[in-house]
Image (cartoon, rainbow, N blue to C red; front, side):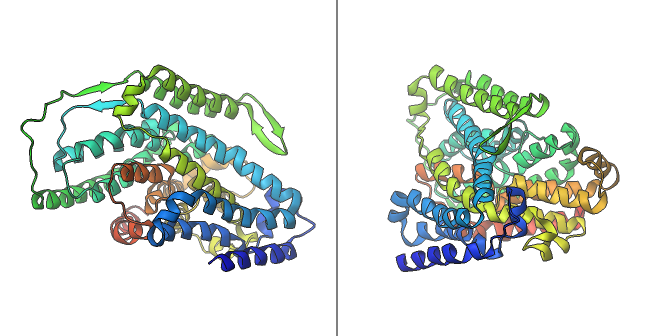
Length: 473
């Protein structure tokens, strides 16, 4: 295995410079020249996440950071040698504009939500579990999929501590709360917020209400049938001596900080404060203000919440640590895939881009790639593709309004694909991995990367998405 890794690194180191072009001076041009095999390290880190926990769980638990770093270095070193300034700017760009804000937002939501303790003697019946999922699905559009998932996942697990079959509960929680629930406002999921920043009106996303209702009702009904099936099979032993704890929310002041996070995100979309360049990367002042607000909200939550609350909430830092380390490698190795996509018909995926015409094509192309790539730039790539196809030469803001007025079904397809299909894999949306990690801390055996796909997302989600396509697109 080690010899294979060394051989791959040598291959990339020797081969990639031969594809470099003197014409490449900036990050925006790289997608035209990068070969398709430059995404091998990205595929490598995804396969590592999928395979190592199955074949070498102990090794993975102790060394996943080294594996993530390995794939990042295997890609970054030959990439920089080949494309020099353009490569360095691309890497700095994805870290300063994508990875760092991504981690700050996740850390803030994770920290604040960890200080909210829901107490009470709740028994996870199928009916109560449906109510949990319904509440989380509704909240996700208003406090974000990550915020909603982090607030509810621990009480959801505790309510079902007496149940034997729990895996399906966490999977449907990921489906609904961590993904599909975020489809109604730009606050719900990053791609919709990106659309808002590029001229899509804030409340336009309510056009996805029919798609949202169809998918949510279908999944909730299916969950209820599955959960009821397992509930009837289980012998539930009720401990009559157990003290009945009344329902109570401890640390409720953290909801103020949660609102502060939402406000900081909204502020960065509405208030334009100017821009500047740092190490060749174009950055905006409002984004840095947002990052500072989010950090402040997290620190205030830490300072004002008693440690006993977090202890009783069984809060640990491991889930956010795992996400930060793994996604550092994912974001690094993702650079060529995103660049090639952005190059459109001038890049190595020209055949794919040029074959996308109907709303159904946009739904599945955006969704399929969002299952493995960052769904925000994928959304923007296909939005720009649609704008260029239907309104070439028209300024972006005006073109977006034309798209909404004349061909809104295309924007609906792109938006639904980016949000809905983030549920297809553990890495499709950030809270997916965090929910999985928290569930495993509670001793719940979660399916592997491929197990999640073949046992749940392919037979359940993909089938439902086919119905969405037939009905709406």
